Image (cartoon, rainbow, N blue to C red; front, side, top):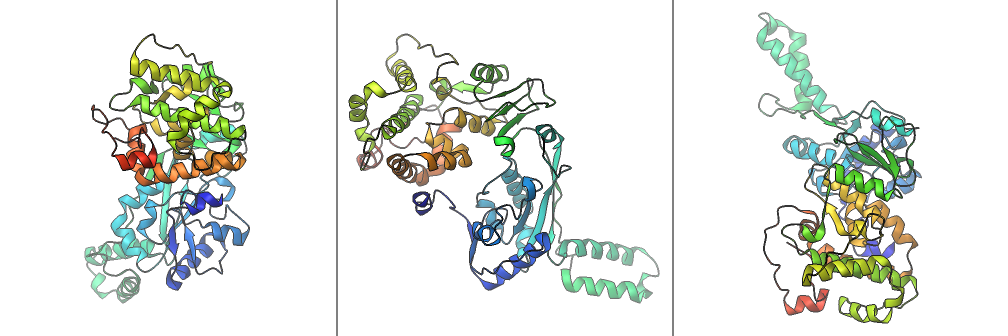
Length: 444
C-alpha cells in the first residue's frame, strides 16, 4: 500500500492536526466520547475525526465507531467536510456529515475557533447481529455540541433571556440574572450571535453497509431488493434477496427499476473511449497475472500488448471490442446477455437518486475496471489491490495518479454525470497525448 500512500491515493486529503491547541481540543473531545486519550500531538483525521495513527496507538480502529453503528465524530474545523471517511461501515455516513457541516458552517466555524465539537450519528439500532436489523435503521439524527456544552448552555441562556424579558418581576430576580451572567461568560451574547446547530435527521432509505461481508439495501424502489457481496442475506423483510453471482436477477432488478443505461448510448459522453479504457484495464489485469513485465508501460503500448497476448485475453475484452467497433463503425449490434462476463462492464447508473449506490454495485460486478472500483468503492479497491501482482499494482497506481488525481471532478463528471453537453470531445494537445495516451483523460 506504500505506493498508494505516496501518491495520495490512500489516506489522502486528511486534515492535519499539528498544533498543541488543536491536539488538546481533540483529546478533550476524545475523552468525552470514549473515555480514552491520545499521547500524539501531530496526526491526521478524516471527516469524522478518526485518525489512523490514533487507531493504531489505541489498538482499536473502531474507537469512534463502536460495533460499526452510531458513528461518533470530532470536528476541529469546517475544512473536514472535504476529507474522506476512512473505513466507512455505511455509505450514507459521509454524505450526512458533509450535509451537517455545510448547513451549520457559520456556527461550526465560530464554535471550533475555541473548542472541538463532538457528536454522534444516532439511530435506534445499537447492535447489528443479523441482516434483518439493517431494516430497523429508519432515520439517522446528528447530535453535537462542544466539549464544554456551548450549544446546550446557549439554549439555556436563550430560555432565561425569554423569562427575563417576559416576566414582570424578573428584573428583581438576582438568581436569574446571576445565572444569565454566568452562562453568557461561556456562550457570549446569544442575542447578537446565536450559537445554535440546526437539527439534521436523514431517512436511511437505500445504502451499502460493510456488515455481513458487504450488503446493498434498496428498500424505497418500486421493486426493492437486498444484494449481498458474499452471500444472499437470509430472513430479511424484503422479498428479493440475492448475491453478486445471481447475474440474471441483478440485471432484471436494474431493468425493472430503470437504474442503468448502456454506456455507448448515454448522452453527452464518448462512450467508445470509456469502453476502450475498460479494455485497457482488462488487458493489464490479464497480462500482469500472466507475469508480463509492465515497467514503463504507457497507453501507447496497449495495442502491442493486445497483439502479443491476444490468445489469453478473456471474453470481456473481446465483447467490449465488438461493442466499440459497433459504436465507431456501425454494423450489427453485438448481443451481450447478462450471463456474459462483459455485460455489466457495458453499463453505468442512470440518472436516479440512487445512482452513486448503483455505480458502487457495478464496480463490484466489474472488478477489472480498477478506475471505477477506486472511485466508487475504496474499500473493495484496497482489498483487491493488496492481492494483485506487483506490476499491476505499479501500473494502476501510476495511472490513477496521472489521470484521475489530475482532474477528479472532470473524470467523475464524464463517467457518471448526466448533464454533460452533447458535443464532440476536444482533441487532446500533443503533450497530453504523450502523457496519457491517444484517448486522453476522460473528461467532459
